[in-house]
Image 1 (cartoon, rainbow, N blue to C red):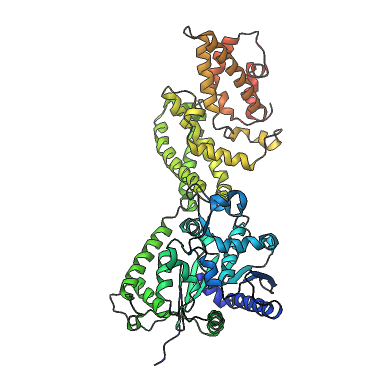
Image 2: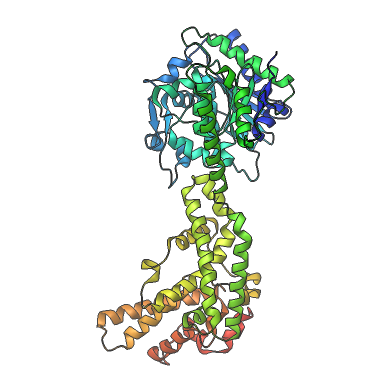
Length: 578
């Protein structure tokens, strides 16, 4: 009875590369480069590459000669790593992969040396090409292809450009757990890599048994004479890479292995792909376990034909547990968009609270500070929910590698700015109610600092206010979310100036602070960057003004005092006609 050909995957990536001939196109590019080099140059220890322009894609193929691949990639027994800290200055191409949460990683030195030897002449402009980009390579050429793809990710905008796809054939692992973490944590990056591995090929497996330090990333397409299966869970991949090897290291012919990929790709391209199995399952078998057995059967791991010293049932159980962990980790990935509607509701509630406080002629800052109504108590719950959301988002953006974090920051910058300008004043009110001082230096939460920093990195300094700013000033939130902290410090300075226990040095320091505050406030008003609510008679700002006016006397004159002494200016400012 003939064995049924199987392709068991469930992964969109594998279906994509096969159904659209992408796998065949990638291998054809490698084969053409191999043929061209064989005819013109002969064997070499160096890596060669060539760009192929197809009607529907651009392919960059990397090729290395096969005879010395195993020995070359092993380096110093497979432990010859280059750390990211060593590369930071000498070859900073991969610095962006480091993050607060994952600050370092290591790359196989032989693979890195091949990559750096041709890096200067690699076509970096391919990112601007409108056609899909496929980067491919065999053996160590696949390692170089992976490193080249990684180097492109820093500048790649996944929102506007099609992601590159790296397809390797028989490529060894290239990095440690740090590199795996940097890539595997982000689906957009991890999905850029598809590694095809034959059960006859030793090279993809040699570093696993040597050190145990090398870790996989991306999707692995494991193939045998029976069929193929895809896996993306790293521990599962390591388990199956070793369990599926059926070659003989002593008598292995690298050229025959190379040919086996060609045969596999061509056969797969002409076969009907379907989800099937030669196993009959008990009715109690879970769908997950049944699917795993199907996948294992496709690569030759079936209970009736167990390879020597392999407990297939143990492998199935371990794989089932790993798949459950993987599914759970994906479910728990922080996704700001899933809670965005809830956040919008809480912000809308605070907007209403702000409006009610304004109608009460006090402003929402002072309403919350003085707890004038029961509605002020309800605000605490809204604040906590919003703060938890934005603290988590800021923390996630900071942990991510630079490009992914920057993309997250840009996408949520508008919402984060509105949140900061709406909520931070209430935190300031809470801070000064407790009798504390110097909020900006001693009490300001880190996530507010980061949100403000992100805004400053993406916007230009304010210039002359335009007509739109003047027309909408009545509804704006004060641009400087620490405005009320400056007001509170100014009130404290007034008390120090009028108090009997203050030294001359303290009084002089208070005067200097008040003069700075004057210029600060006048600059905000001049640029229509502060809410008209500050002019409400019961606000802390107006309290400061009344105290300051008494201290300075009627003879003192400045830009701000001239403006403040004419009450008509308050209404003019609110209508944009000041």
